[in-house]
Amino acid sequence: MSTPGGRRGARRILVRIETAPSGRVALQTAAEIAARLDAELVGLFVEDADLYSLARLPFAHEIGLASGTRRALNLEAMQRQLGALAEQARRTMEEIASRGPLRWTFRTARGSMHAELAAAAGEADLVITRAAGVEWSALKFTERPPVFVLQDGDSSRLTLVTLCEPAPDPAGLAATVAALARGARSAVDLIGLAAGPEQARAWMAELREELDRQGCEQEVRMRCADIAEALVAMLRALRPRPGASK
Image 1 (tube, rainbow, N blue to C red):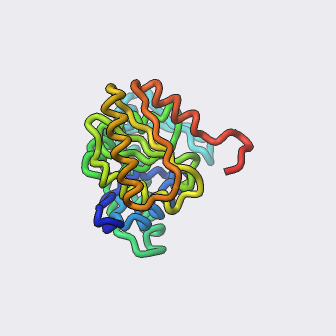
Image 2 (image 1 turned 90 degrees about the horizontal axis):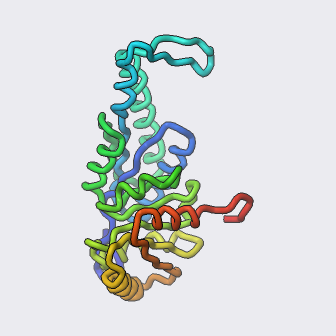
């Protein structure tokens, strides 16, 4: 991706595809961001190994949402259901991607949800995830690329989470932040997770210089968390309050 000053930002963006309505919103937002950054969008659907383990239990049953019928849950039935959900996810991604020029790839993986996402994140330049629960996804992926946390699916609220040690190249990250900020309607929050505050401050100062050099006019609020619990507290504080305007 070409950017002001010849810097290169995100080339590959990863998003986990969920079949719930909130997952579709996240996918739409991820597609918009990928188009804005001229990056390839990689959609990942994970067949959770825990569900297969559950299906192997002799006492496992499921209840149909529409019929209310209770029936035995077995491995073959679970494979069919997850296969159907994966195909549904692929069609959804194809539909959204077809609305505009977008390079995209869909893949499925079977295994631990956390492990598969972490492995896929290792091949990406940016991960897009919904803020949910205790923001476990952000905590899991900060060892790899920066994580863009969606606040209730709102792409105008830009929150990036990254490690400061070892830190991503400030020039490359600045290109991504500057491009994302152009589409944001509020200040950008960048949270770094670091054990050494001195190194974190030096890295953030370099990043701010790069942002100025690349002409980023949007306000970028940088802060540093020294432990995972502090990072979770910061992410929770950024959630929109009930009834608050966005």
